[in-house]
Length: 73
Image 1 (tube, rainbow, N blue to C red):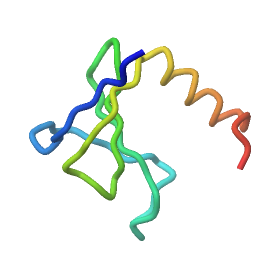
Image 2 (image 1 turned 45 degrees about the horizontal axis):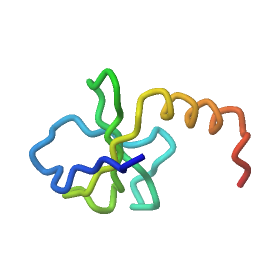
Image 3 (image 1 turned 90 degrees about the vertical axis):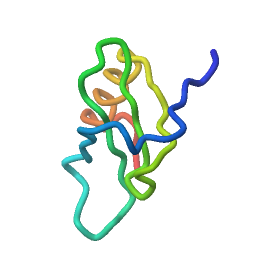
């Protein structure tokens, strides 16, 4: 599978950070809502990009694993 990437994300509006992030600039990801088949994901410390495009089904599985603690620490 070829990885899909958005090189420059500065023109895309509506990024949101994880509710677990804090104002101290720690490691965090941001996602862009509004896409049916995919979820753009970027590093909050690099707001210009790049962003990786994750298939929606994979994102749902990832979030479920995080919430259930299946990924460990």
